[in-house]
Image (cartoon, rainbow, N blue to C red; front, side):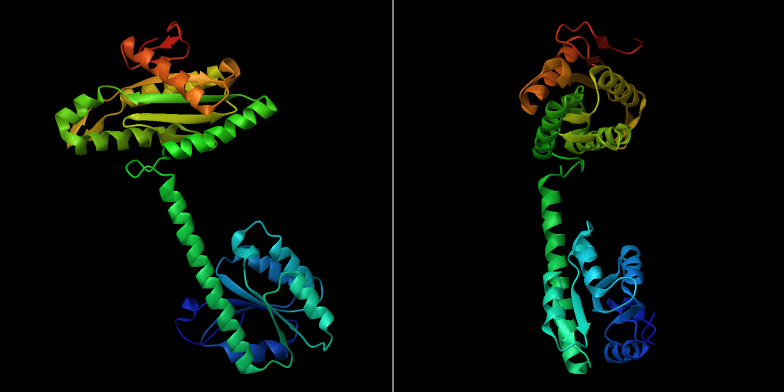
Length: 325
């Protein structure tokens, strides 16, 4: 590793230099030290290992002709990476050849720029600065876009997915279930007597109750599941590869967990309950996620009519799970 001697060198942007010549490595370190922190790999294979394990590297300067893995082969691996940070990383290629074939091939393989040996200090600094700043700008834009996308699909109160995200994800999962004839279920859950909570503890207390319910739903779901707030006090879960029985078992576990939890609302400890409806694609054979949620909603309100704090998995209300059953 070639580092600046300054105490805060770890705060400098990190560049990976891929070069088997010690002389060239020392020269580039001299040119760039103080502005960048240099990591050194002696060939493409070592460079690839470092790129896969060090997320702080922001730019690569690589020679072409090296043992084990050439600069061209390293470029191809970088551009074919599934990691966006690597795939979009700026790469500057160095070569001593006067032939344009290496340079043209490097550009075809995804190089961002080219610099000829012997290295000119001012040219090197200028090219590195330009590509580093460009990469920073691109990363900032990508971060902003991700943040905006997250805001567009997230409920601001509970931090669960919102109704829009529920239907987008649900449509995709329903299409997969239909194509591959796999199980897929939905749980719709509604907080019982929510108006009473609002009237007693105010809207802030109602918000606290919703956040508490959201936390339990997040704890209960599996990694492949997703949960969303789809209405004022209504939540819904997407359960891929889950049949009606599996969804009913999970729904009952959720109902019981909420019933036995004690929630702090407006500095008071209270009990809350859920009414839950279950719908499964394999049984209903619907055409859209809207239809499947509508069936789950109908069963949810059937559970409410039968006394609340229970789950319903059929339209006749006979297959209900209630406290103590």
